[in-house]
Length: 105
Image 1 (spheres, rainbow, N blue to C red):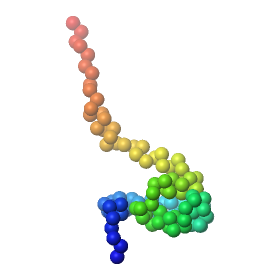
Image 2 (cartoon, rainbow, N blue to C red):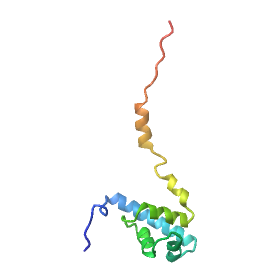
Image 3 (cartoon, one colour):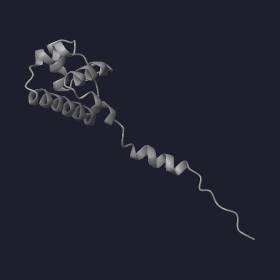
Image 4 (cartoon, rainbow, N blue to C red):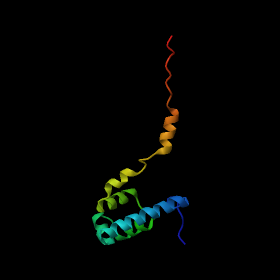
């Protein structure tokens, strides 16, 4: 049994999200008819790393994810992260002060 380190234990929802991202990357690779070895070569990493990404292993660095997305010509997809920050926008709206006009006398 492997030892869990701080970097590998995650809340269940995050594990699920990471597995979903890995599955989406795997499907993108398959749609392009590329092998794991081909993507690994284009992303300058090992085939094992590509397999770990596709399985949703949490220890793969985000820079590797970016290189894999670039190899699949999906590099702009990273810009979609946190694009719709509904909670942040709601908090920001609460802190905006409503300006009131003076009465016309």
